[in-house]
Structure formats: C-alpha cells, structure tokens
Amino acid sequence: MSEAQRKQKPEQESDLGLGGFEPFFEDPSVKLPSEEVNATTSGDSSYLNGQVGKLVDKLTELITLNVDQRVETARIANQLIENQRQLVATQQILIRLMERSIELTRHISAIEEKLPAVFELPAMVEQLRMKVAQMEGIELD
Image (cartoon, rainbow, N blue to C red):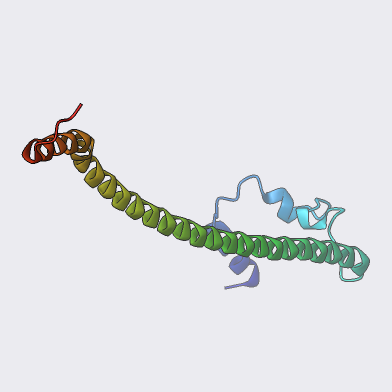
C-alpha cells in the first residue's frame, strides 16, 4: 500500500465525531485556551513566582486559621470540662443538702408528734397538783 493510501484510509475509517472542532486542528492561527494571555511560558517565571507567592500566602493564612481554630477548640473543650466538674460538685452539694433537709424534716415531724402532749402538760400538772392536795387534805384557793 502506498503512503498516500495509508494516510487516507485511517482518516476515512476513523470518524471520531469531532464535527465542528476541525478549525482548531487545521488552522494554526486559532489560539487554544492554553495559548491565551494569562498563560506562562518557560521563559516567563516572574508571573509564575508571583502566583506561587500568592498561593503560599493563602496557604499560610489557611494554616494559621486552622491552628487558631484548633487552639480555640481546645480552650473551649477545657472550659467545658471545667464546667462539667463544677456541675458535678454542685450536684453533690445539693444532694448533701437534700439529705440534711430530709433529716431535719424527720426531726421536726417527731417534735410535732410530741407537741400535743407538751401542750397538755400544764393541765396535767394542775390536775396532779389538785389530786396531791386532795390526798394530803390541803385546801386550795
């Protein structure tokens, strides 16, 4: 097969469905996106160095922000732990106070049960005094 036939045959057989893209491949004056103004060449390193510098600055800011957030998170976690300790201590104090309150309530209830007898004591003493006087034969006014 001749050289011309080999070149024509693959082109005819391989229709890759690239319709509309032929100008990019055929016309050398058409600029591809990689050839636009913002692109750098191997000889233009100042633009690349500037971009790298900006990226490094941004990365530094992000790392600093990340470290600051971790420090703040650790501080908040420590404060939370301390608050929980204080809460537990307060709850223990409240439990002790409630136990004392229950003891005092029982004591007061026991006293209240005995109060009616205490209030009746003067009358009982008077009755006993009268009985003793009567037994002794003493007249009372």
